[in-house]
Image 1 (cartoon, rainbow, N blue to C red):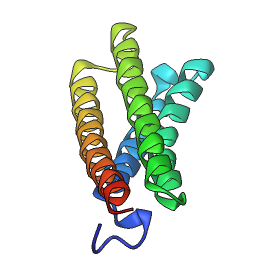
Image 2: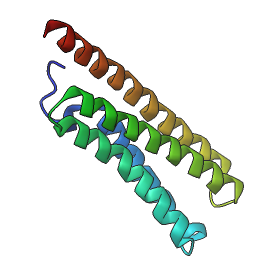
Image 3: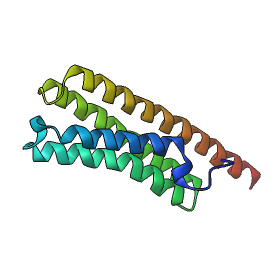
Length: 129
């Protein structure tokens, strides 16, 4: 990927970071204050999204990178699922739910696109060798 020198340059990572910040702000609400296990799981999933994008970028090969992006996408799905739990339990209002879900869906699409590009590069490398 020309122009991308660090994982911090990736739009997918930047958006995942923003999602993580939004999740952190949400779990600070009074309704979630004593829901420690739920808060922890949601925060861990959000951190996992951005961390796996970064880790994959720093790995030695494209196959590993693609695998880490798959894990990041899975974690993003976990965030979305936990947002449904939060909304269903009344921990967050519908407006916040819709905003965070849309943000998570965008991150998921970006990760999917990035993974597709990485897999194409991996496959092109295999053909050349």
